[in-house]
Image (tube, rainbow, N blue to C red; front, side, top):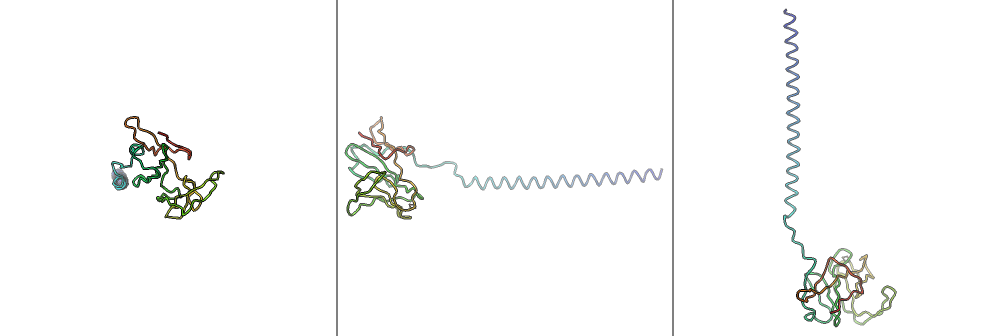
Length: 183
Ligand code: FES
């Protein structure tokens, strides 16, 4: 009888220890899980605080006025970084963003016109685009010929608004260098 009680109490002690061990391990797991969840929540909040709820991006399609109001020759739209050209009834637009790292190129009048070969065709040019950042140079039609710029300046599509006849620049659409909008 005494031996039976002793065996039973040893078994109870062992069960009790097992229970307390598994309770401890459960609590440790819960604590670790809570820590991970807290860390993930904190990281998400930190990241989210860096992303604005509203994105203010410049419109990619915008009006620049009536064709008749644009000055003959070149007009530079500073806030759009866009060169718009008017040659009589023809219009075209060249981006002022350098194709190297995006600095704004400046149109530069040459002291005297020079003859250059662009795409196998000889032309006389009297102005160029120069990038002040790393010295890239582009002919007047945007063709890159010196410096690190890998590609020509982009040409953007011009359209006429059917509503009020204003010129509309479509920055989402790139066009070839022979593009002209004739009004
Ligand atoms: S950004 Fe124009 S040459 Fe580098």
